[in-house]
Image (cartoon, rainbow, N blue to C red; front, top):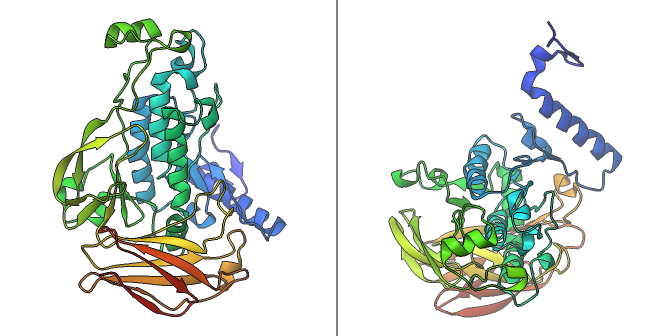
Length: 404
């Protein structure tokens, strides 16, 4: 009887976990009525089925900073998106920094190499989350608190952010597939490779969209999972080299090895080097602090945008189009006004790309639709793995590019 709290819909016993759905729905509908020219953004840490219709982004709450916490975020995201809600994110770096901030003579955690390595790896994972968001208490998290340009950790954080922004044409087009066709950003591997039993319960690798295989680094490669004082670290590692304020000097530029399984049924390309791998095998992969292992599936067509500081800083009038050989492929580049609901009235455009692997021809189909401010004439720079490059002018009409 004490729990029989009354709500507008009746007893709380009747409503139960539907409360977040009703709350988010109320915020969404009333905000749209108040500011109809702006898309509603809602960040919440509670969820009930059906909430995805409001575009609300759910995060995992105020989590503690640790490698174990980072590991848990990946299967949490995959299981969450499997419920039908594609909008998931975490507090990059963890919300409560704890010992990383205080065991180092009360120095700021950004100066602590143990935290630096964890923060970089979390930032890289965040770059391939549906929403990328660094947030927490205790410390300042902007990249310029982690050193200066040209220093390894500073550059690694910036590289992760730049990688995310360079993929915005791919991500935004994927977001339209999520909206229009009930797709998802984070995809458990068994969704795309159901015939491969090796991936059915794979927790720490996933597809981002349908083209990119993401393998977050989830264990320390340069420091330790245990948070140590500077003296404890020296004793543990035998590294007596010290830098500013007695902090140990760690060579974050050293290459490290990790095992990665590549799903069978397709070939894979290293995103950074274009090295080709056959699927269905475990490989020993050399990685570094400034790279998250990332592979493109054969047949993928991935649009790459300009280097920007914010999403709409530069127009997409000269996109790089990367085509990964080895299979036929398709991709639809989606564009609209970026910040209103006119797309609900059909004000958007789609440009279809189709790759024929047998004759090495890329067809850019006729543009469908239009919207206010649409780029009517643009360039596409087409690249494939053998180094072949073609630049074409596109005015909305079908064009075929031969790449051999």
